[in-house]
Amino acid sequence: MHVVILAAARHPVAEPFAGGLESLTWHLVHGLRRAGVEVTVFAGEGSDPRLGARMLRTRPLRLSDAARADVSMVPEPWLREHHAYLQVMLELQRRPDVDVVHNNSLHHLPVAMAASVPATVLTTLHTPPTPWLEPAIAIARDSARSGPHHVAVSDYTAASWRHVADVDVVRNGVDVDRWTPGPGGLDLAWAGRLVPEKAPHLAIDVARAAGRRLRLAGPVGDGEYVRSEVWPRLGDGVEYVGHLDTSGLARLFGASAATLVTPAWDEPYGLVAAESLACGTPVVALERGGLPEVLDAVTGVLVDPDPVGLAERGAVAVATAAALERRACRDRAERECSVTRMVSEYLAYYEALAPGIVA
Image 1: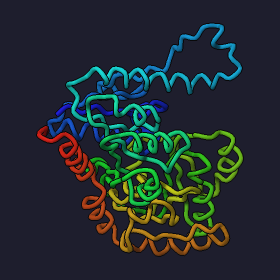
Image 2 (image 1 turned 30 degrees about the horizontal axis):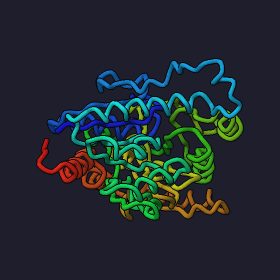
Image 3 (image 1 turned 90 degrees about the horizontal axis):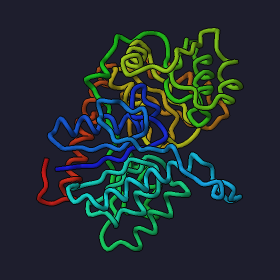
Image 4 (image 1 turned 180 degrees about the vertical axis):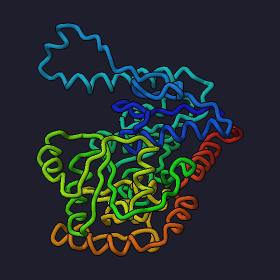
C-alpha cells in the first residue's frame, strides 16, 4: 500500500507541535511506517527531517508587477498556500502508484480536486466548518459519482459537518509509550496555544479560586491577547514555563494534581486531555465540543462553561478531580486514546477504500 499524506502548510510537522493537527500527522506517519505502509508526506517547511517530507513550498511566489498591482489581490501568504496545494494535486493527477491520498490539511483544494486524481482521497475533518472548506465539500459531494470520503476527530465534529457530508469518526490518538505516568503532585497544569479560543486566562482564574499553583505551557499565538490577559495574571503561584516538547509536557502533566482544559470555543477533540490521562493525571475541562468524549466520570470532571461563577465551579471540580484514581486515567488512555488504536482504524479505512491493497 502506498499512502500520500497531505499535512497543513502553515505550521511545520515537528516537535514541539503547534497543535493537535500536527501531532496527529507526525504520529500517523510513523505508525503507518511501522505497520509496513509506504508513506509519502507533503508538509510545511521546517518539518521533522525524519518524516522525509516533500515540502509544501509556499515561496517564492513569482508575480509580475502587473499582477501585484491588481487591487483585488488577496494577501500573498494565502496565494502561496493556494498554489502549493495546487502543485501537489496536479502532481497527484499523474501518480498511478498511489493507492490512498489522506488529506490532513485544512485547505479546500485537496477536496475540490479529489475527483481528478486516480487514488481515493480520504479527508480528516479537524475543525468545525469553515467558509472555504464547507462549500468545497458540498460541491464535491454533489458532483462526485462515488465518495468523497470523510472522517472527523470526534462525534461532535462529525455532527457539525453532516449537513454537507457523510462523516465517520476516527478519534485522535497519543503515544502512550511517550506520555508516561507520573507521581502526581499538588499543582495544576494547563497546556496549549496561548490564544483567546484556548483561554488560558480562565485556567488562571480557576486555579486562583482553587487555591493551587498553576503552570502554563505552550507557544504564544496571539501576542496582543497574551499581553492583555495572561502576562498581567502571572505571579502569585501562576507561572509560564514556555513551549515544551513531548518529554517536557509529560513531566509537567505527570507531576500535577490535575490538568485544566478551558477552551472558549468548542474543541474539535481535546488532545491535551488525552495526553494528561496518559500521564495518569485527571482532567478538569469545560464541557464543550469533543471533550466529553475523551473523559468519563472516573478520569475527569466536566464544568458548565457559563462564565458566571465559572471560577468557583472550576475550583470545586479541581477538588473532585484531584481525588480521582490516577491508574484509571492511564487505563482509559491506553484503551481509548492510543496512537495504536488510531493507526489501526485508519488502516482499516484505507483497506476499505482501496480493495485488494493491504499493508
